[in-house]
Image (cartoon, rainbow, N blue to C red; front, side, top):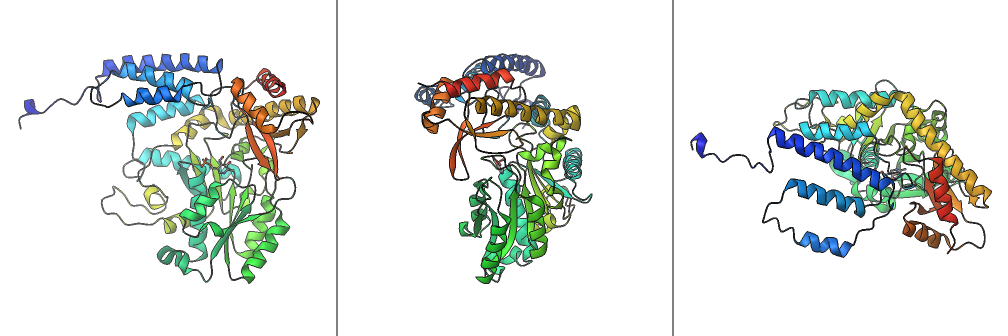
Length: 471
Ligand SMILES: Cc1ncc(COP(=O)(O)O)c(C=O)c1O
């Protein structure tokens, strides 16, 4: 084939520089305008799903469409078709409004599209990620030799912890799986844990019955007495305890398990201690709040999600361990075709994933731009906003059902109010705010979490008005 016979690259996929600049500028402006409208509109989706399905049915991908039109269409559908984490009155699950440096990071990562499987193909990104992980580990008080990596989610990081624990507990786990143990391997966490643990034990091949849920102390924290008792009972039955996962910042109520005591039990019993600080880990940035996580420095491993309170884009988890060699045992593999194979460095040799996106750039840019001080201010502000909500609701006779010092509040309406689910349904239907129904210590509560870095006290007052608005 002569060069002139070779077809040109499709311009719809690879436009020239001037088209890219024009489209990029238009996109930036369209997104800013949409963001403004979102902040003043409904928190919840207002889109007609049937209509969307009919529109989608017309995308048979036979006739190409203009990217300008497609972006306009997509932004409109997202503007009306999602619960808006970008809305300052999204008092939601731990999903944040994404900070701006993290959004810039996504653009840079998307443009270069580096493959982070190996340091050979991505020396700079691998170094940057490792640097951020070391900085977070140091901030948590973990030893200097601690290592880790970015994950797509907190669940992936928690899964990694279980694989490390199984690997350390039984070297033959690598070849024989759960069969290598002298009895069924088992792990412990509290009954207020994040339920992805059920999927994690399933995926790890030890089965859902291997998840032992320990009762709590009446305040949403793991009861260490019950934990010690469960351990000795399970051992007597021939089961093999491998891991205790303490939660720092429970999903329902933001409570912190007794990290130091759980660490002590793990040391005594020869178990892996994992701290799931998926949401609360960002509190390490604050001089005022970091003491709440005391004991995290004793953990064998830690999960912290940057896409929660560090407010990066989704999903940007971290797994960190004090054991510098365990990951390269747990995830070792041989592949001649890879550009490099450096033990304890190349992500494909130390993590669940193979191909990897440059996730860590999000936290690198936001942490470097804001500094620990900026992030400290961000988390302290959220705690202040939550305290305002607590005061306002308590003053109106609402019961406060958790005593978290973090930015999540569980409340129960005064007697005579409609049932909790009806109140939440009404608040969501109003579009004024987003809150969740949750359960803590067996009680149904309304869960209010400050996840948007720009939520104001006036936004809280609007939420209180929406909660109080009886039909
Ligand atoms: C304490 C805790 N751990 C783990 C997770 C799971 O994180 P992800 O949703 O990133 O998988 C969550 C999610 O909210 C959580 O609250």
